[in-house]
Length: 506
Image (cartoon, rainbow, N blue to C red; front, side):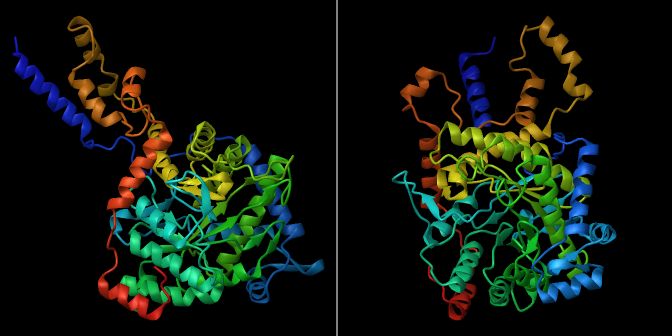
């Protein structure tokens, strides 16, 4: 019989193994989605046909002159009330010529991701004007310092696959300084793929100059763009927005990939019926696709058809609703059916506190979008208060939630080895249990995710350890990261050159 000391040393070794990072990550980003199909094929075809009819018979209004010229050259036709209509063949040609996938580069190439197909990645979005203060637990206006802190925090979170500025620095009143300092906060604090918005088209060129400094020289950023633009060129219902269209032209000229976002609101700027909403929203996002491919066929564009819901009793945005969950899942399904890189929005909790409402809304909406196969799931990390707020603790909790979601997407591998007929017989006829068996140890590392925040202790131990709730546990983790993680992703020379040429406020 083995001695007690041998037993104790073996137990310590097993505990150390469990505490260490798994040799095999059981749920990495980029798992395959698409198992959840809220729409039948015939329903997708009806929605698609209605969208094409809207573009062919109603068309788009407020088309800027430069864009109108390019669209007419691609086959658009004039209609009454200064609208342009798109024949079905024109739209389908744009779909056929559109980019089906592209590399979303990180400055660190190991952090790059491939967008398209059936791979699912969670990331950020949003323009929160309020931050849930990590010390007071109350909301206050978001600042430029907050943006730097959020960028540093998410840099350590493996399941945030790209970072779009999640808050607006309300303490920077000048719009050019705001755009410049937003991008500076990103390049200083992360090497992940990143995204931003440009308030005006004339801001694009100067910011590309900053990105060239980071990339190593004039023209270097365009060779391997590690930032994409979030643009909303469509104003619902069914018209273009001139300022955003101008940004599209500048981004294409500077080789900046883009997410063209349609953000209609059911019952307000789009039909209240879910099917009608999907048809109009699809038509509008197709109008963005037609625009991009009329300017430059095949240019990388994420087909970002984001259905938004309002509470029809009050007019309040309802980002955590079941309707939001099913509509974004359906949007991902339709976009993937078209074969285009899909972008949807999820995890936009309406809850203000990090509480049960917060967790339920985030879990339901993000899981539905992932199961449906959304390639890029925006807003899915850190957002609270119907996108008006953003939280450090929510970033930490959402990161762990995404691991559970990726584990669901990974599914069950049914193989002869995993079925384990011989292992079952051995355990039944031997020890009578599976604890400590070779198959169990192998599965433990390969098949199971072990959360660091979710509490699985029995109640008495939890009470003895301080009876921590999720909010408190996440706050402790966030504070630890923010007090220790100060990355130096810009060289002193790069930082000095950027500061010499731009008004950097931090």
